[in-house]
Length: 129
Image (cartoon, rainbow, N blue to C red; front, side):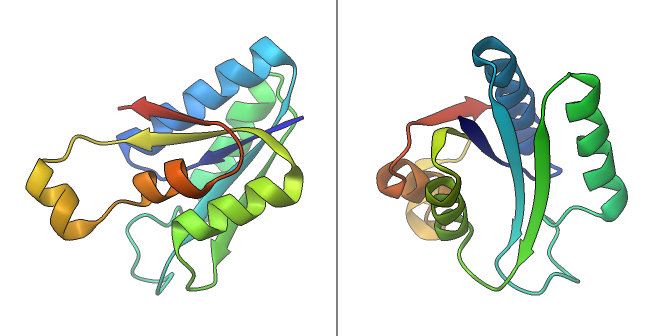
C-alpha cells in the first residue's frame, strides 16, 4: 500500500514527512510526497524549490523508503489535490501537518486540514508541528 503525505517547507510539513516515513517503515509501505500550490507557483511560499524537493528525495532514500515526490501547480485546492491523489494510488493513509490556529483564525481562513479530514476516503493522520 501507499502513504500520501501533504508536504510544505514549513514545520508542519516537515513534521508530516517525518511521521509518514515512520509509518512507512513500520508497515513496509511506499510514500507519495505531495507539494501543492493552489495558485501562482512563482509566488506561493508553500511551494518547495527543486533543491528542497531533492532533499526530500534524499531523505526518503536514506530512510530506505520507496517513494515519489510530486509537485502539483494546477491552481486546484490543495485538499482536493491530496484527496484525488490518495484515491488514485489507493492510499492506506494520508498524513498532514497542523499548525496552531486561533478559533477566529479557523473561522475566517477556513482549513485545508479540515477539508482533508472530512472528505478523504483514506484514514488521515494529523501531526502537530
